[in-house]
Image (cartoon, one colour):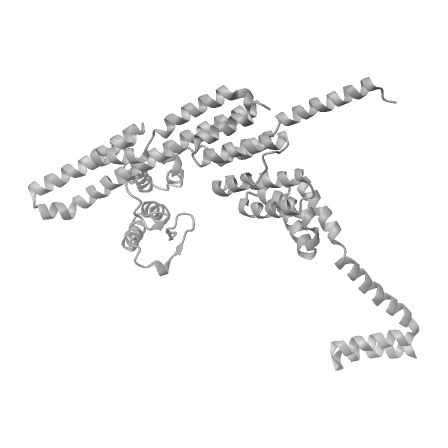
Length: 312
Length: 139
C-alpha cells in the first residue's frame, strides 16, 4: 500500500508543487517508511563533514604551511599565508613580523620590508634578534637610497656592542656615508670594519677622489662655450663630435639662410632647430658627466665590496 | 668527570670559534645584498641594441628603410636633443611602429596625426606613465 502511494506521489508532486514541497514530500515519505533515523543521521553526517572541511586549516596549520613555503623559497605563497595568520591573530605578530619582512625583502618590496623589520625589532625577545632586525631594516633603507634614515637607525645603536655587531655597524656606517658622499667618514668606518685590508681600502678611496673631480657643471659650461666640448671632457668622443657637427651644421644653415633670404626667415625656419640642439647639447653633456661619475663611483663601491668578500 | 685540562681545551676552542665568528660579521649574502645599493649600469647601450625591435618584423623594403631611418634619427639627432616629446612611446617610435603595423600610407598619416597632438595641451585625454611622467599614447 505504502509502496504504491510513494511511486504515485513523486511524479505527481513534481508537476503540481514547487521543488521544495516535492523534497518535503520525499522526506515525509522516507520518514513514513521508518527511515527517519537514517535520514537524520545522513543529514547530520553531511553537515558535520562540511563543517570539518571548512575548518580544516587551523591558524597553526596555516602558519606551518607558511613556514614550509618560506623554506621552499616560495615567498609569494608564504607572504599570503603569514598575512592570513596575522589577520586572524594579531598576537602571533612576534612570530610572524620577521618572516613577513623577509618575504617582502626577497620579493624586493623594500618599503614593506622596512615596516615589518621595524615591527620585528620591537617584538624581538633578545638583543641579538633586535640587532638583526635593525641591520636588515638599515639594509632596506640603503636599498631605497634613503641614507639619512639609515644613518638614524645606525646611530641608535650603542657604542658598546659585542664585536660581531660592532663590526657590522661599522660596515653599514661605511656604506651609508659612501651613499651620502662623505668619503672621509666612509673610509674610516670601512677601515674599522676590516682592519686587515686597510691598504686596499685606502687605494680605492684615492681613486674615488679622482672621480669626485668629474664635475657635471664644468661639462655644461664647456658645452655652452663650444658645443661638444663638455662631452669630450667626459671622454665621450662620439657624442662630442655628434653635438659639434649638428649644432655647427644648423648654425651654418642659419647663416646661409640669412644671406640667401632674410634674417627673419632664418630666425623662423632654422634657428629654432639650432637652439634645440644647442640646448640639448649642453644638457646632454651635464647628464653624461653625471652618469660617468655615478658609474665610476659604483665601480669603486663594487671593488670595496670585493675587498670585504675576499675576507670571507 | 671532565678534567681541568679538557675544560681548558674546550674553553680555548670556544674562544677560537668566537674569534672566527667575529671575523665574519658580514656574510657573503649581506655583501651580495648591499652590492645592489650602488650598481653599475651600462649607459652606453647602442641604439640598435636599445631599439632591437626596430629591425624585427620588416615585411617589405619600405618598412626596412623606415626602420633604418628611425635608428639613424635616434643615434644622431634624438641623442643630442632635449627631452621634448610629451608621449610614451615617443613620436619617432610611434611613427616607426605605425609604418610597420599599418603600412606606409596609413602609418605616415597616423604619425602626422600624432605629431600634431604632441604639444601637451590636452592632458585630460591621456593617462600619465608613473615611471616617465609622460602621457601614455600607444599605437
